[in-house]
Amino acid sequence: MTIPVPLQQLAATLEHFGSAALVTLPTDTWPRVITVDPYVEGHQLVVPAPHEICLPYVAANPLVTLYWPAPEPRGYALIVDGWATVEGADLRVRLDHAVLHRPHAHADGPAAPPV
Image (cartoon, rainbow, N blue to C red; front, top):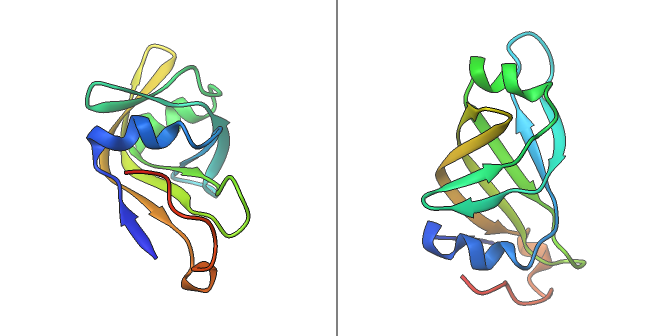
């Protein structure tokens, strides 16, 4: 079950989630996953001061995924894909898409956060 989250609703949706996992794609090894606390600013997500290991990965391959696990059992997770750029010590992510997602088998779980 997938529910699109428009950019203009993303900030309100983020209020229902905690920290996210940022997935970056190095060119010569496995994907890297770090915990971050992004926020919406204008038409982008800002990832303030992620671990410096991901900055060269983003510079080489800007495709990133941010994943917020469901805050309750059988609830919706939030997944955002986009293109990141390095700005000083921060990342700025231009969204491709954002969705709330859970398996159909979890349809009896809690309602989705407002979008």
